[in-house]
Length: 405
Ligand SMILES: Nc1ncnc2c1ncn2[C@@H]1O[C@H](COP(=O)(O)OP(=O)(O)OP(=O)(O)O)[C@@H](O)[C@H]1O
Ligand SMILES: [Mg+2]
Picture 1 (cartoon, rainbow, N blue to C red):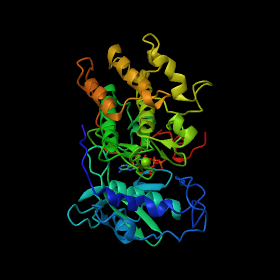
Picture 2 (tube, rainbow, N blue to C red):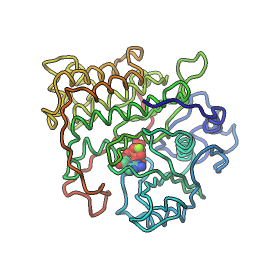
Picture 3 (cartoon, protein in one colour):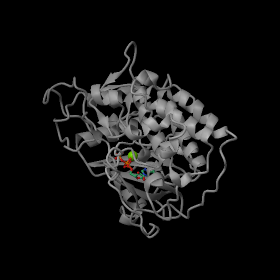
Picture 4 (cartoon, rainbow, N blue to C red):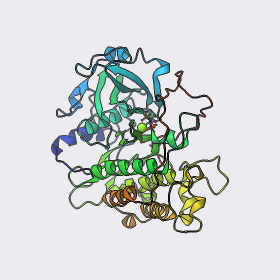
């Protein structure tokens, strides 16, 4: 399980405070921003423009500052056939750098990196870019993706991560095609366990971070299906002192956000637990949290599945038929009960992530969990690259945005 470790907490304030004082309507904010501002921000025009310099980046950040030219070279001019994925912020490109000097290298030499290039400039994009650098640059845990560096040059905002060979959990659960075979039951439980450890680490007493955007596309998988959480643009420091929650504008992704957070804007670690429950349910069912292509009454996975999760005879209706026979009923019931608990409408009835980790640990070790063979794919396909499987269907993907209840 992930141990907590202490770090310079006072320095963390730097990541958030200069930004919180600027209203979303000020400066060069964009209408499609991923994040909002706290309701108690001062009115527009009452604060000086936000500085957008490397001075905002925490000194203790253990990340390299790249020039734009270096990342351009590493990704061969952001070649379209090296796109690993696309999100609300822009595209993620595959690139190569020397493992010692971090200088760009020829494809196939050195280490593989994933370069996220923000296509939205302006205040909001900068704010989330900075949150990512300052949170991920400080944190280190086997279940958090490693941030290698960043680029802040003129209006360019880029992030450089370790490349996760198997891409996102979302792709493995929902994309169809020869590359993406359905994940076995065992691998689903392994991924759930890893992601839970990452969240538990964020929530633990010394770290106390609320992640706020837990979803299948933010869980990345390495070559051994170890899960790592990425995307800290919406992360928040948890409440301090007597406070039980932090208040924020409601941000996140529809289908994953906890009901009380949607209703009140009150954010706690239990909001992340709810989102974890949604992802666990996606893993059990192989269904997306929200899908308007499903029959009426089944669009919202949680609403539809909840009544079946505690019913021994009806649970099979929820379970992904593609992995039938890979688990015992007893194990499926335990996993379903855990999902149901995480999805409690009342936050106080949800387990802590530490408790979730404990349950998932038992499920890993259980003798009831049969082992299955998972074929090894050749290499992770890029979006437009030649290794992209024929017949891969693209799907309108859920993206983080302001949420309205
Ligand atoms: N470090 C990485 N290694 C390999 N693939 C990655 C990496 N980071 C991102 N990707 C791929 O790029 C895709 C887009 O990532 P990105 O974080 O920009 O958006 P998202 O999480 O899908 O959506 P959102 O913008 O709402 O967070 C991911 O779904 C994943 O497939
Ligand atoms: Mg993401």
